[in-house]
Image 1 (cartoon, rainbow, N blue to C red):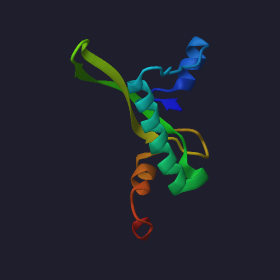
Image 2: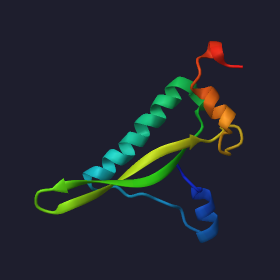
Image 3: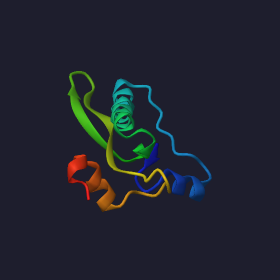
Image 4: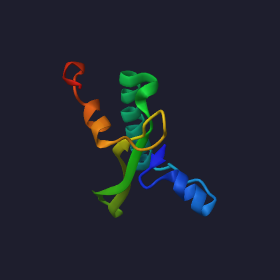
Length: 104
């Protein structure tokens, strides 16, 4: 799983991998959402799916006892090119969403 601004860059800079641990229900939902998005893309594209580039954000809800509860949200903001591992170009990303009959 790639993180926006690059988990590989983080690992190279700090000598550690970036990891999101999930124990609470919100974190589990966050990772499950990412896995569903990735799974849908793999079913549609096979090995040409690439890896997701995600942005870590947060959302919240009001808990009766504990007040405002924050939970993580992973938004897919792009995909890597499977051949190079680099982020896809805008043309490649736009081409993804077009039906085959409309692709150039």
